[in-house]
Image (tube, rainbow, N blue to C red; front, side, top):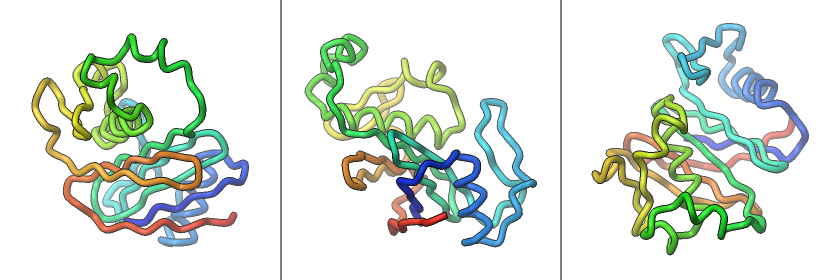
Length: 164
């Protein structure tokens, strides 16, 4: 799995197209979208997922289904946010908690409205309807950004700065 990223101002679509064209020789006019808007390729040689937060734009690409989320680690009104968290979640790192949930939702091609009420992050693990989610979550940082990568099984990955 490769994580391509940039801090240059770029649209997600342009970044996705640039990475897929340069790295995988894929002409991106063949994008399709799921009913919730997740872009994909038919008969894909590569699966991908995009995220952006603040100045960071990142794309995970590899052979298996993937969800990727990033959050800029900056001050937030955590008191207001904690009202939406379960008691167990209030002791967790907010940025890991949130990126785990988003990456999992994106991995599934679902919506936050559909999945978020069913998810809980506690003890560093993600649960859906009380059961551990059957995926692998990997957390890492790029500068001041927390990222979570969601895949079906553990995947080695590398972070690659990408200049347009």
